[in-house]
Amino acid sequence: MAARFASLGNPETKKARDGAIEIVDDHTVKLNLPAPDITLIAAMTDYPALIVHHGFDPNGDIVEQFNNGTGPYRIESAEVGIKVRFVRREGYWDGDAYLDAVEFLDYGEEFAGQVSAFESEEVDVNESTSAAAVELFDSLGLVRSDVATAATLVCRFNHANPPFDDQRVRRALQLAVDNNVLLELGVNGLGVVAENHHVGPMHEEYFALPPFKRDIEQSKALLAEAGKTDHEFELISIDDDWRKNTTDAIASQMRQAGINVKRTVLPGATFWNDWTKYPASTTNWNPRPLGVQILALAYRSGEAWNEAAMADPEFDAALAEAMKIPDAKKRSKAMEKVEKILQDSGTLIQPYWRLETRHMTDKVRGMKAHQAQEIHLDKVWLDT
Image 1 (cartoon, rainbow, N blue to C red):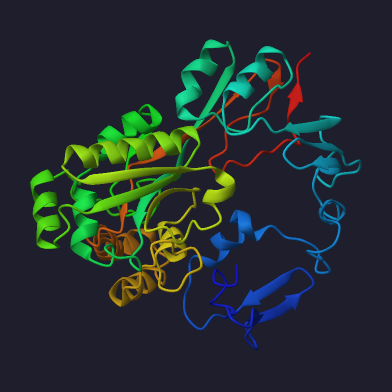
Image 2: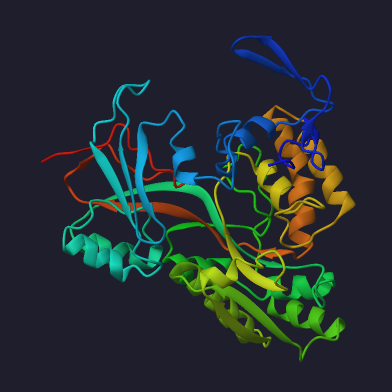
């Protein structure tokens, strides 16, 4: 979060600069920035920015401290990996929640457990339905809710790990893949094709580059020029369905282009330990309202979440200019250069923007899929 708020202070000291935050009155603060930063407010809404009491102690009783808040429910009990139970907080500032209690049950990564839970009436709604399970869950007679999102998956190549320090190698692997095929094989077509620069038509500053096309011959030529025609590339993914399926499809397309690929699949508990360090791997990225916001988090030099270890001064400078422009149409013109630098670098294969889907029984009212995978339950009820 310190990096997200860099325009207010120093990410190393994690303190605001003198005069950066000015108290206007009891309910108003004024932010004085050294340079324009249109991502600042959006960063305050990002999921790592959850607000806790200023006396929060990470070594203390986490559950009890989370109950020191203003939400419509409070945590009654929590068993990691099993169940968390919330009960209604009486006197909630926006009116008492409709439900007496809500229980979240953990059925693991496989959707078979969710299917059994629905069939035995153990649950009323799931958090999210993977693309591979949508048709199955539809067949159970459940109510389906979809929303188009900026949620995505990227296959990124880490610049700090040879041979991916060579732009020719990265570009060769990128050109070996058809994103249209990955959309169909990875998430059953439930989404929109992406263009390998992590900005999409749902972002107000999106600039439409020429369609990205697979080019196997150019891919082979670049690998030969880099002397890596016979190199074995390891491609790592987590073991859940849509991310694993998409990564399998990427590897298959690369093999069709004559590239030697080794697939490695890791359980989540292992995968996330080193997700920013793998030479080549796939990760999912949650949606964010601004394209520049995503690029600043994922590809700007020195960022904690820069899993590609990208460090391109030209890209950083072009992005900084775009982040200064509040008018979306004007910012879109600046984004042409930003998107083109990232795409041409071969840093990532970004196959699609996916739908967010959720299923529920016909008793559930007021519930729908959310583009940020959030779950809002204060106005949800059961029709019994």
